[in-house]
Image 1 (cartoon, rainbow, N blue to C red):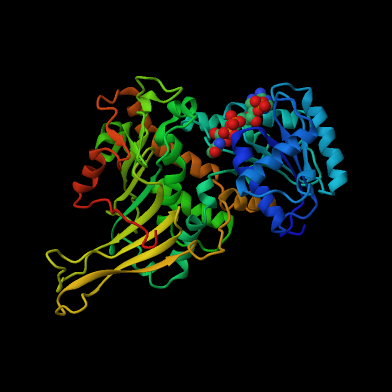
Image 2: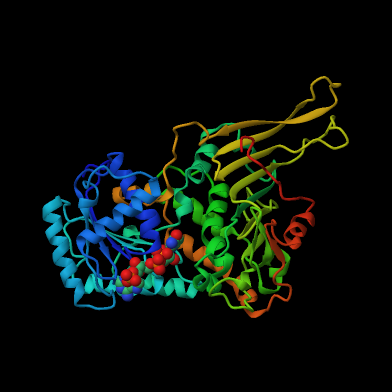
Length: 497
Ligand code: NAP
């Protein structure tokens, strides 16, 4: 198969949902526009509401036009889309889907290749996969792949159950578990920055690094996802997957080769080396928060407990800060601080690597000791890296320093539009590259780490909720967590923002 222009039928279960509309259709369009999809592809949408093929194509067209604020010139792209309405719990309809796939395979010469994308609630994952098998849709002469969205379970036991169900039908190599952070340009860049620069790797250990801080903050609240979120919370929604994936990429050993297996193997080793947090230690290492009323972008916003579909007495955390320790040779003694939350002061994801101080400081900065060197990786919305250094303060005596920054901005240059995470991940899946998807071993190790924390939080009512105002950077206890170790969160602005 031509690996740059993959041929495949993509069946999207949940094709009338939010994810398909906002992310999947626009991403497929970008791939088509760039010529990454040749004409040998078809997309079949599945959902319950009765739409004709034309209505579905108009729906796809609308979603693309809304995403890119431009009109599609013609119907070439949408002509590849088909719709097959049915309730996925009804066995009979799968036979008709099977006939449609066989017919489209002939029309588009897709060589029997099938991708089943489950863009619907996780409770259907097991049913859909077992029906795909029992009704013969997975019997094909081409490849068969399964793409699944988060959440992958709500704890280790439920994740294991789900995994057992889908593994009866698809092998681990055929399963693509989406963590869309792994499709982000600068998250993918972490490995490249670390392993392609001679100046960082020798310093990338507990002899030279004081701590690493990862912050992923949102200004949005729960919007219309209250029903889902109130049963999930920030720990399950963000930490178990995205935050721990970033920790793994920052802490992993260099892989022997850049193959999927070699990279995943190194990431799993990091997750296994996370020091487990016992139930009675949770308060020492983790802080939970829930937003109260506040002001975002000059507008008053309600408290979490006042949001639609949220329990007015909810114990769910909308903010998590934690201190992680990695018990291996490279990282022993270096805290990794993570922080994520909703309704915070800014929308931003960034990593700050704080280096240790020079062994003997000969200089000073007016009224202060010199600033430590920081390497900042800006993940979103700005993409880039900044290295914080010290130099001589111009015009002053040679003993006085001033901080300065070396900055690289990935998305500041006009015309560079970095691909959306979903665009890259869909293309990877079509080409059979699972590197930026999570392996079961990573999912299992992450739940193992997170489970004791969520157990304690589920079983003890947070008496201080809400404990941070919307528009702030979280509860005071999150600052205390670092202060106890003699550190603080670095409030980093991107130099060009
Ligand atoms: P959603 O808007 O609620 O969409 C659900 C889809 O499933 C709809 O197309 C719905 O269409 C269909 N559906 C529901 N029950 C069905 C049934 N019995 N048979 C056939 N179709 C059925 O959900 P979403 O936000 O797109 O999320 C989809 C998945 O992606 C979830 O696992 C979610 O956690 C995950 N996810 C979403 C986002 C996001 O940005 N939205 C981000 C990360 C992960 P009908 O009502 O017409 O049947």
